[in-house]
Length: 446
Ligand SMILES: Cc1cc2nc3c(=O)[nH]c(=O)nc-3n(C[C@H](O)[C@H](O)[C@H](O)COP(=O)(O)OP(=O)(O)OC[C@H]3O[C@@H](n4cnc5c(N)ncnc54)[C@H](O)[C@@H]3O)c2cc1C
Image (tube, rainbow, N blue to C red; front, side, top):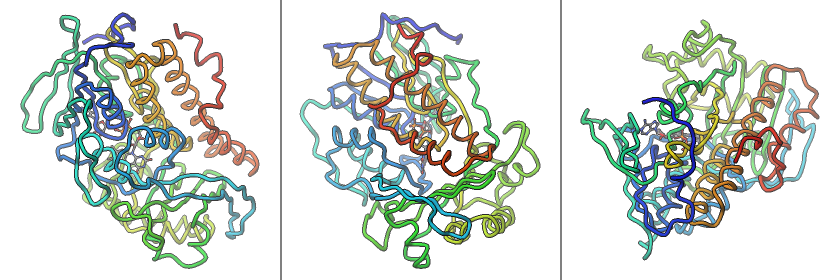
């Protein structure tokens, strides 16, 4: 199928009828969208390529920004707390002494807890994480089909036909009034609709992992308990915070210390990796991973090198958690952004990471997914106009994506004084409502 220019006549803004909606991708963005649209009474089918009914948890943390919290206030009916709060931000020097601190409340959660709460609300999945809410009159039918990899999309008789291949290799189609692409930073829908948009390597990776809080030394626990703690040095940034533990527990003593350790791995591209990058991204069974090395698969020899570097370069508290993690994983940092978010006369939209894959420094990917879902539902319900929806989602995607590139490049490839890093970090925490979108980010929105 060829690329399609954006038109607007088909966009369902303020519709009375109940729509058949297909959401491609059943991770956080797809589930937020599915839940918000089912709450309006629309029939929602999520198509997720993952072969099993539940996505595989990497066990890592998420900073629950304003829009994530607002989303849960609006739509969650599980009746449990979502996040661990951190009261302060602080920066350490190489010896582990605090060199800067600011009081600032932030909420930290885990990807798995968010996922299970969304599944409980969307399609009633039972788990030890949370209660499943009662069915509510007026909600639309919610279906989640795993093992359905979407392969194509075509306009047919004023509706949209979505083609998929199942786990068993069967091909099928499903027709919808409206389709949402929430299929992540390597989005299939985006590659069909915007074939020229590329996902590019940023020149560094994030080494990630967790350690149970009861397995770290008292000074290390003190550095991270109710604290969002950072360290910067040339070519390196590491940060850590507490997140919920097994099955989403928030009980002190049972939570996890989560770290994200950015370090440079120069390479022309991910397809033609440098020797060092190839070594890091080749797992213990000899298989090469392009973007993410799953938890527990890292080659012990490659990881031992990183542990030695951590001991030499990081403050002792950070070195302890990097060396203590049992299942590290690696995420290559990439950039990608779609030039627009509506296609096929407005009957197909992209949201979340499929629209703009942010660098993790922005701590905004889940907030973007939550915001995109809420404002899309408000647009379909007629509470906001199509123009406002488009302006807000595109300006957010463009502004935050660029900010992440700038922050990441300054942090990894510059040699900045600490106050510059603090400035960048504080900018990334600015609430969305306080943003004044730059003219370049909205100039083409009509
Ligand atoms: C398993 C998993 C674990 C994660 N863990 C963390 C974490 O610990 N911390 C963190 O900050 N972020 C994590 N992320 C990323 C985080 O979910 C996103 O950055 C953010 O929440 C935006 O979500 P998204 O739904 O837009 O994109 P994503 O989370 O990337 O989800 C995209 C989904 O679309 C599916 N998909 C892709 N192509 C197709 C297709 N052709 N047909 C059907 N389905 C398709 C994918 O399988 C995936 O489930 C994780 C993502 C996944 C998928």
